[in-house]
View 1 (cartoon, rainbow, N blue to C red):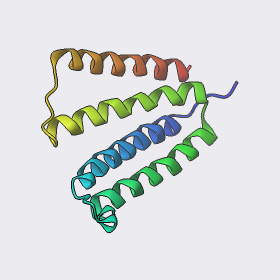
View 2 (view 1 turned 90 degrees about the vertical axis):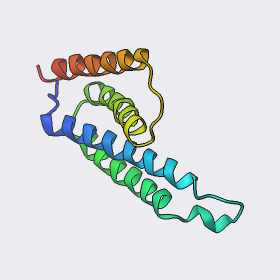
View 3 (view 1 turned 135 degrees about the vertical axis):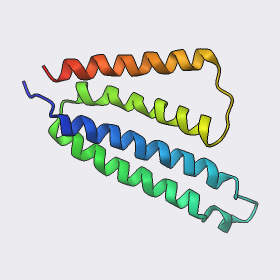
Length: 118
């Protein structure tokens, strides 16, 4: 049985941050889209897709060296990053139950990660 190295876990977490930042920039870029087809070519939108691509490459590298059953649950960190980005940068309203859910996600991912290093 192959042990998942720490760097593979860190790569997946980095992947989730990059793809979540990509989602944030895509959200910003959609504000510039008009009826003009060329309006979809704007910096935030293109930058968001670029971050998605870089995140995918990093995920591929992580999956090469680690166990899928250990690494894939870390994708849940995307929820954490999007939650924080939308709260602090988009000023979206977040309720107490959302915070509880966020803590539960982080706790669950921590348990899975701890089990993957045994």
